[in-house]
Image 1 (cartoon, rainbow, N blue to C red):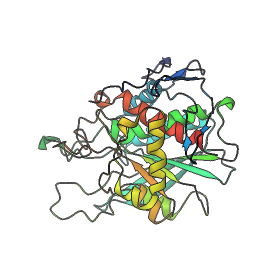
Image 2: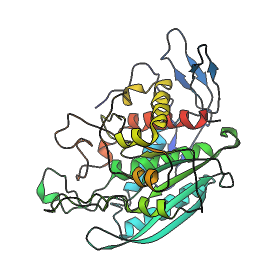
Image 3: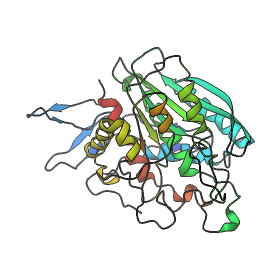
Length: 363
């Protein structure tokens, strides 16, 4: 497990009422966020301070901008999803959680569009899928796309105990964590005092049917196209005709213990400049240790059809555990142990504050 980095002071906790319940209240919008990572200087700014300092040699020396990301809030959003149980396709838990996600986004002033589709799984099962698009300033055409999948893996087929292979995965990390970060970002966008650039809109896209992919017990090779079904559908049939975005950022498994986010190969192929932007932002806010400047592997994930079909340069923030014998995605991936006991607030904080830096730096 990665310990909290030494070069950054602790963010003051947000107060959360009924964190395990369906309603979540955050108090005190003027959270002070201290930065001690530059020698002999520190930065204190209220939740919506926007600053940038220009340096010589045409290099921009960025200072932290935007509100403080509340990891306790994101943790509570993650926990609330898990309380529905595994959100496997065609289940009541899936339907109930989808409705909850939409209502939460609406409560923060987002315009919500459900995109429903009947998609065929690898085994011929017809899946009742719903992509959820929550839009901030939907009237604007200059947009940034933030996305994650919200469904659960129906089989724990990577569990070390073969007896668990046909059990569903709770998907606290591989599902709920990405949506939790997006919900917290939406919450922080809702106050009038926390506005982004006036010309910029944001879409939070919750992809469905990502994890009904080829199980490991099958004897034949994985064809590769059985994953990311909701993303494949949206990329070919966007919720808005001619939809475009400056770029996209996919959040996949962004709450795990000991996570580090290497630079994923497909992201580098299609959106290298966005990779550089995000990894640089992580350093500015003091979380560079979570985002090492090292290349990982190529992943078949939701960003693949976003890049290839929708033609939107999109990166994947996804963990890489090169020394983990269980899986390079981490020890809980597709196991019954992907639960709240293995979610780390520090990881949520690192990813969330990095995204804040990226979004609030845009002009």
